[in-house]
Length: 212
Image (cartoon, rainbow, N blue to C red):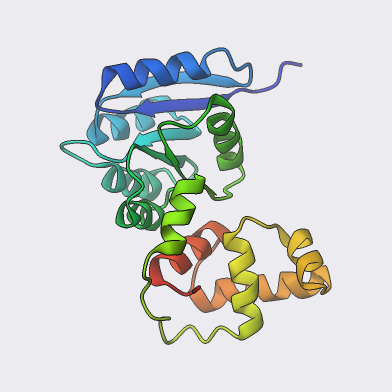
């Protein structure tokens, strides 16, 4: 039985970029390019008509930018994952895309392997940041910790490792604690942050500057 392919939509206001991404991805056997869009409004219509699983979203576009389009897509089609693509590693852009619900942020000079890996990771709902974007967030002055969440020191440790992309097993090994304890801490973190997933928790933590 043939393996189902990941349905991908490319959104960019520059035709040459769309063509380049298409050439990158078409030879990959487990990917299917279902369409292209030149702006955020076209992206919304394409998501309605084509039902992609992953959208490669240009961050800087006229009419409806990447963050606004991502937010609209995630609200209307929560099953669709969005990866932001840009030539900029500006901290505000990274945070805005993550806040909008993107599960990835890559620079357009990434390799084919990096892009393919990010797409496959997006299907799991796990966050992928380019090294440049991650470094930009780490080096930027962040807001003070937001009061009201009441995360314990251990929960902050776990949250930091979640941001680093570790799963529960890896967190347990890193902190030398039981997997069940990690699961308890993760559940507590989600409840305190009032979010439903690890990606939402990571996005909120980065946006609010919870981790120094």
